[in-house]
Length: 280
Image 1 (cartoon, helix red, strand yellow):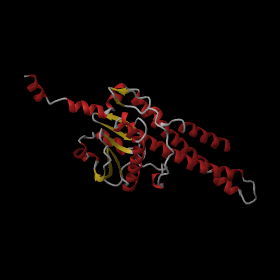
Image 2: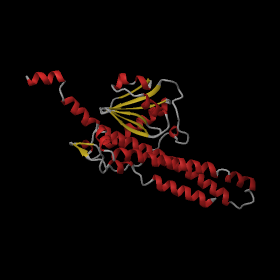
Image 3: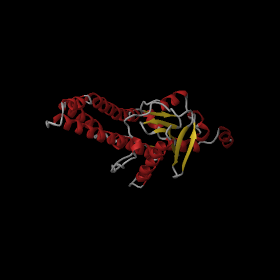
């Protein structure tokens, strides 16, 4: 049993630790002078997050009703918390979520989906909609959404102060911050499981008279739950890297993720009537 637990713990460590998100983002090229990748971002020491952000039991749906808590963070630093439904957010954001997008945000499936004019993301605790000039975090738990949003804001500020940050548009820095936060939460979950594993190993190897067979039996009964938790953690870490790699390896989606560049191009193209008038 001890060998099985140690093997599972080692497997999870191998999956989690080498997958730093900025290594993946750094693969994205610069397109037309408006970068869609982060190069050489220095990894910062993870910030200790509130206990409410535990990944032990991720929510599979928005159980609080149709209205969700929203934390809107703009590129200019403005923050606006408010309540909204997923289907009515278009009145404020200017983009409409499809029925499929709403289902994706209501599920617990990790997703990074490029849409015309925005990016939909669900990386576990951090989920929402990213535009060229703002990001909105959504969820049913108001305090958790606010904590996640403020942590993303903190990391985004740190990224913006890094050398060469001006080369990269807002949406890329947000993705970097959100991915870094998601992996920090995974690492914290792994640390909690590691503590449980150490306690279990101590109980199984304790040969003192005070350690009865019933206590050892109870310790053995925790093997399966720990195995399930470790496998779940490993699966989530692997999936987070896979969905980002899928976008980075698809040229069309990678181009569509350059929201700032696309917005500038859209603003520089005059309406059809004005264009015809200029021709005459």
